[in-house]
Picture 1: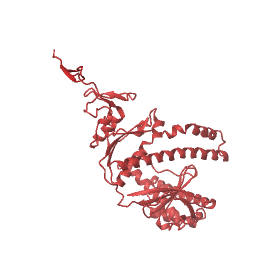
Picture 2 (picture 1 turned 120 degrees about the vertical axis):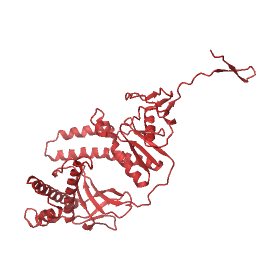
Picture 3 (picture 1 turned 30 degrees about the vertical axis):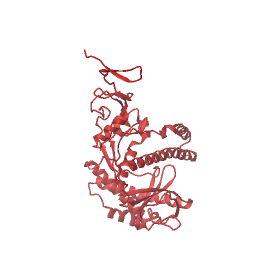
Length: 406
């Protein structure tokens, strides 16, 4: 499978200028190609192909006075911009046909977009220098911070500038087939929540870090400073970057937490079962901020691709499975319960059940995993009285006295 590895870049002043030029040229070619296709659609003509667009908007455009500056960047960057537009149209039409989730039609890019990116393929002849720098055509050797080794030779590299003004190099690599982890007998079901981020069927509860809630005070202060700056001023731009950096720190901490937890679960369990949550629906309720703060979707994506990479089983059950309404011990359906009910007693077997652990056990059982229900039990239910009464002789020996039945 293909994976992306991202590393921080530290370009110099001239290199930042060259990257800004590359971002701008790629954006202009993308917008020109989008305009050409929309013009053809309005005229009832067929969409021009990538070859025609490349000849018209890159090769011939460089010979004109208005677009002569396109020759200042690598041609591969401009070609990849056309491929990005073609991919956007393909995804849009596949969504209309039901082959994938629906998405909007391609839109024009703006120089004020928070994220700018250009992609270099092997044809661009980029390389990693012996000194560990990233050599990019017409940009130079950019210093890069290597936090780990790449598992294989990358095929492409994408240079990204985020809203906080940070630069990253994103490499696409193919994983090796010998990365499968040793098999284990442990399996686990996971129930995601807000008070506890994840509850496992073995009884483990992982507290929710609430990164956004913890940083909310500082975010409000930076946002308030931004709102007081005059539009178009340099001070407003500086304040905007401070807000973006504060949000980036929250996002980075959340992503790191997701990576560590998902890796631990994948390493310790042979099969993992989760519930297919309706995150978009929950994000429209009064719990929207907490739902976005938890980042359930990103965590499940990590679990899924890491399970595929390391040879683990990954199962999703339907979102309408009544995991919180069924006793995991006897299977009695007790019906829906309000959210403030965290412990409940089963009417069938009398067990007192922890709501979250019971749901996690039911998630695993619904996926066909064999898990024990003992962890969901909070305390034993009422036990019928014995028909015998225990007593003690004067010498300390225990005796049992029968009680006649009525």
